[in-house]
Image (cartoon, rainbow, N blue to C red; front, side, top):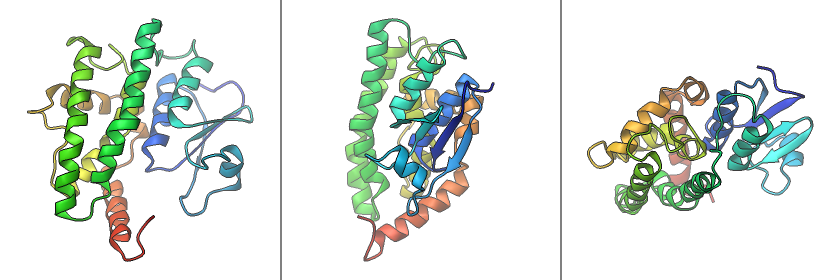
Length: 234
């Protein structure tokens, strides 16, 4: 389906935050122009469209930019409320709950998992993994509460905001597990999240938005090599 007015998405193929925007647009069935951005050579369009953070994703709708991934997802849901499935529930309390878990994923889970992702030694990986597990335990409990033990997703029977927030990291989680020798979403420890992850990744709009595992794995190995170098990343 063509979106009303010009619709562009500025993103990077490996960015989990850009993946959120792609999934939301895909679920709504919207057509858009995708513009690839590069970490070390950001376009004038990106810097003009997001002068505060200069990060992806940026959704440009009719010449007006919308920045920050969770804001973009909610904007897509509101701007095309009559198109495709809703990404936020109609009930105000349920909407607040979805936003709570999306914020938890960014503020708590990601901050802990990021340390694992950036670890370059076995010792640091072991410590980081130990620190991220309690966040996953909280998410497992949150999923049980949101799904009431009967629904497929945080959002109920269909993908919603919290699903997109966490699901955008799934291929990254598997890539980091591959390198680190870990299994973060262990089905024995986190059966709800493990089954949820498989359902999420099986959705067509998700499959189209996700990076290819091997390509991301090579990208991540290159990232770690630079991180471990004397200059490294800041």
